[in-house]
Image (tube, rainbow, N blue to C red):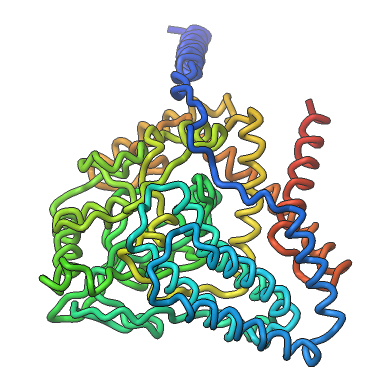
Length: 504
């Protein structure tokens, strides 16, 4: 055979390979079936609808800054005293959720926050008052129907609203004045314990946290009651060795067990400790119940791989999303967590979550567990840097969900679909030998590309927002409150949309 015929044959082989690869690429380009169509829920998401009031508070804050702290001390002390007395006067009463004292407390917290923001050296007094309000409201809620919209609105306005007010003051305070750890209610427990970052953690405690990824912000905000938390974990403390194990379910790898250093290594913008109330009849009968629940969860995690539940079906025990790790463990011992189920009603957020694989919109959202009257808030960690990041991420997500309600869809880079499908196949091989691949088990290639598109959009918007925040701070002399952050995020999103339309 001549050299020419060899080259001809080689060319034909190369052509056939290229054609085969092209055909394979085109086949892999065939779009997957679209997520099921969704409709807005009947309940509808909570809305403050108080833009004018927020502007009024900001104007009062500016006036307070001009007046100065020495002249505000008397007003601060008077407001603190009045709010405390108002709570004390009804502390032993059994109140209905629409009792007049609750909106009075809500307004009092917001208006005192204006003064505290101008005098952040009084932050510790404000934090103590917020803890007092939260304990009072949670005690009152013990006899309320947690699935009532009236009750949910009241709890949200007072607990989420109170935290938001405290964090507005934190953002105006010098970094050194903001405590990284806030101790709340010292709920008794007889289960094994360990010291973690200045807090006595007990076996059976529940950790709420907020991750740093854009999808973490979407989970926290994508709720009828937008919150601050995106993840749930359950604590186990060994009764003999004192070893701390954190049982949790990750999108990337399903249920896993970590020690405390591994748990904290993942980005945590904030962490809250929740503990089952010691006076619950089931705990009075068996004080070790929380430890038994944590032990059961730890044993199940050790028995074999449990995939992540992207559909968020808390009735399916074969797969678990993060909330189910805690709720499923306690359910075995007769404790039903999330006395008020979470509802996701907004059309936009349902559409986006559906594109990621969510199929159940009455579920157990991490942020809503704080409102469960069976649980006491023990402590919360956060610091100014992570708090600022949390707020910026929230504002961007809130604006993007507004756009989603108007029809904006989660897009993806279509020509990357074949590559993503190959990576998904590779991930499935790794999953088969209990390893983690580049695309999470349970997530398809299209959803992975949507996540990439969404994350890159969030990063671009965040860059724009941070520039606008710096301009606001230089022009006004203070950090933008949350409602101003949302305005800045809207401006950044509008600039992004204009830039993209100019390219097309």
